[in-house]
Length: 607
Ligand code: AGP
Image (cartoon, rainbow, N blue to C red; front, side, top):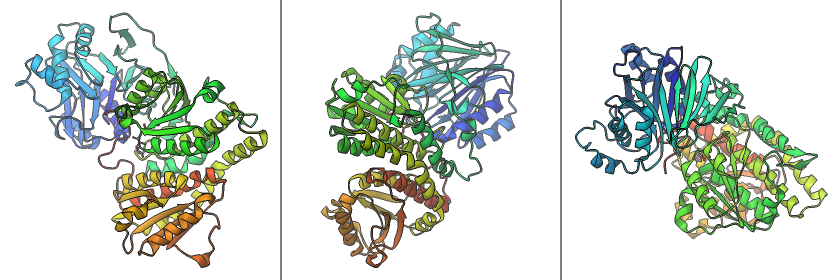
């Protein structure tokens, strides 16, 4: 997704902008650019290109531009192809802007303001610059107010006016902007990762509020022009987690961080050995009164929701729907005051999840969000938020965010059982004791990473990899399959192993790699039969099994990884780490850009 950055202060802006754009690269992009305001009120200097930030850096060096106030952008194409003209920033008249989001009515605006022959790009963003220029007669706030009232869609805009050097204006609707005062000025960005090096205090710009950054700091106004108060937040991320820490890729580092961050997520929410959400202000009634639960999320976060569904339905006995957020509103969802909605999102900015949450709240549903980024839109939109303590997750492929989301779901399930009087102390204590073992069990798996690397090497040249399991094992594999395909580009499909013979088994041929997970006692015998079915058709079976369940003499596998033993409902955790490492090693050994896979963005802020 597009990344935006703005800086004004006493330092050389181009260097700060370029360094910050590198911190935003993980969001995914295809072109980049910066603009610097000119103190003599001449046109802002603008440099942009398709390609990487490193290409932009070269162009800036050649252009030898300097300045102490500027904006920068990494573009993930939505309207118009990848080319220099479509890169941001965009200029029109005295106005220069960068934009993250989608303007749905840009066609109408082109017609309304007679822009047909006046545009040089195919982007909706350039149209915003033109409309801003149309309204700009010297008062930036008036021009911004009139413009945003004409826009339909999502936007985070950072704006320079040629004749107001040294000032950056910004306004948003849905797409994120965070901002902070620095020692010598001010900075804004799409997300906290880019401003962490400059400050420990930041704020999330409220929607339809205009901020003005200058060397003196930041002012904020609502659209009627009244000054507005700023709600400051503290960066509680360990900045050292924002670099690779000696690992070749962030993905490996973040996989290795999981024992620590899962512990960081669990421990503060255990009081006297019991799960406790007092700090989050979640009353037991919220967990005991709901008649059903609806989880809304995308991608990996949705897969975490599937595990939550298994836990809650098995242990609490209420129905849980897990709905992909992009489908939620279009399938006439039945949510009401008796439906507890749980929105799960690492970034807290995924627009599909945010819009689905807003819809559910309009239906009267109570809501809890599980979010990693403090102050993110989804956190602010929900009644309650439980923050995972994964720290900044830079790799596009989500790993530690997933397992910390699971950690929260394990805690929430236990609290729900307490709130409903379902568990006695003995059962609760046994469950919590097992939950507290998770970090060490993850360490056990990580200690055997070379074994896992050998397994990964068996599928380096695979064209297709199937993954089969039932129940919770199937949920585990849906996530494992997404990991493999998004970082290795190998087609992978997780399949409920009982469903396989209803068609898809036709695709299993000699040497097709099939990863099977067997961790649930109640499902083991059927899962083993399904493994026999694929093996008898020539599949190369990679078996991830709980402990010593099958003796060597009944060998039905080509490779095996015996997982450390936990209670069945917790086996997700060790199994997930194995599948994450398999995906990682395949991608790294194929020489791919593990952290920034092609076409992908870390935060999807377009629907
Ligand atoms: C998973 O590895 C991907 N990064 C992607 O599926 C991601 O989980 C999804 O886009 C949801 O993002 P969120 O958790 O920030 O809402």
